[in-house]
Length: 150
Figure 1 (cartoon, rainbow, N blue to C red):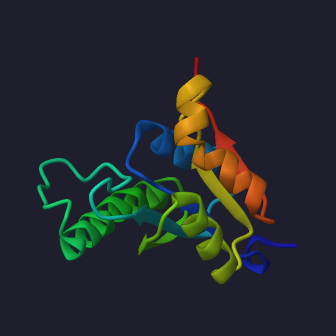
Figure 2 (tube, rainbow, N blue to C red):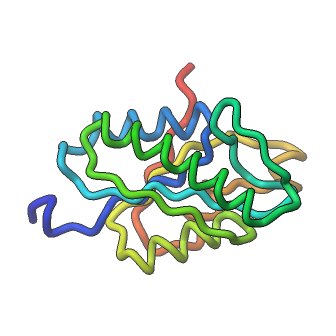
């Protein structure tokens, strides 16, 4: 099966260093030229992503948060393109975050979901949960979880 026969790679991108590392790692592991969707999942107030540098917005204003999420996804898409992917951006409003990632992966028939693990453990892991773990547990898709380099 060639890369053109596969669904797109879905990057769950929140603007964090681990999300950037995940894109870089996927670029090393997968051949160039793959289709990709760079997804930023957001919600008002506790937005769930890191906005582009210098961008200010009202976290209670859905339209502003959505535009900021699109800016974050665009930064991720430029990284994905530099890593050899043909990337498009997508920002969706959904909570919890893992549900948005799994839903979009199904809608786009993604062949692979790529995301960084923030490594929450202990009480933080219990109360905040792990987006990477939830995606892996609830999605029927193949998931590449990239951990911080030691």
